Length: 170
Length: 170
Length: 170
Image 1 (tube, rainbow over the protein chains, first blue to last red):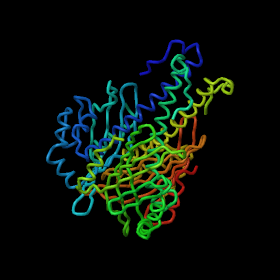
Image 2: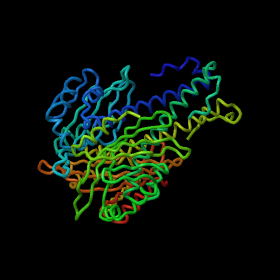
Image 3: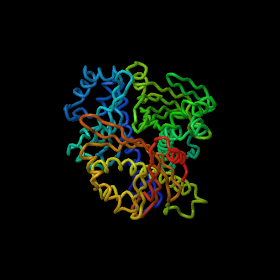
Image 4: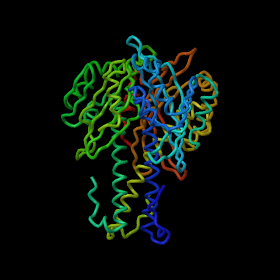
């Protein structure tokens, strides 16, 4: 990650402080970039921006929602363009994601957040789904990208609670 | 922004590293301050803190909600003190904003988030509105302030989706 | 906080810049760690992770919810294991917290956020409670911990609005 650290860091106190600052700053930047990527998902999917949604994943990134498994960018793009999703955004909806809890370990990371899908129908809004989202991410030359996102409903099933319990574990 | 960078940064490697650290840190601080400003809106408006809500904008900052256009701080302050808003908070409500997606470009920035307005009525809570919030902000001597906020419902209208699609564009 | 600042910071411009960078970075790290702690609460409590929920507080940390007062970690742990809470997560629920507004003052901090409790019942989800959460936190040798969290409903009572108005005040 940190390519600017010079070998004199062990003997030169200024170089050591600089190297430590650079490493701490890099970690904060990583955490911020990942939280921003997660926050962008709901905005872009509700806008119907299929390509930009798909580009949050690596080329062969997986998006596994209980009733639906997408195994690469093309399948995620197709989901956004599908009649089912287009029907949702034509009616009015919010894929409302909570703040991401991010854990970085070198070039890999995990982010966990809860979400509520609200759908507009005849002047009213219904929280039709509550769920947990477990994102696995990887540092790539183009920045952080999702490699595997698993989304499960919080409807009493053990699977959703098990995903939540993995918060903080890369 | 960065007033401490000295001209020796091009020849002195320590000065160059310091200048780069200062610039990266400044960007993170900007992003954090803007996200915090956006997060404070819901808290302060639900508290009825009219002056503090208005102070999130520049003196002539605009808050454009579909049914309502406010063209400066005084009009935003008046909205918080209005019977309509006071009625909402007397009954119980939450202007629940999601995490802001922030994009900084020098002294200007854009933040986008979704929101849900929940209203309490006779022991129940109703999500009476789902929407998108597009904030334009400017760096001022007192810190970041909103210059133009546009809020639209996510009720199927094209305008809301167009605002969401502007995520990431300053 | 900053133990690496050397006394030459007043005469040596490099040392002064390093010390300033370290202090600014420390503040951002504190804000990030506190926001992450708050974000983890909903995830861990919905997972039923009693020990990890309790460990967000100091040993004698207080969690004061209107109908319920917990005066230490053991009582918070017992709340998560209680029939009432286990019933909620067995049915399906989301303690959905908004982004935390964090204010740090040395070794103490305050974080404020709104929250919605959504409960799953027979295929539908109900926002049964909207509230405000006022967290007081303290820096400890193990990191930031909550010393006193007060949660009140946003149901029109003055108490909830008064808590919201304390946003930004340590």
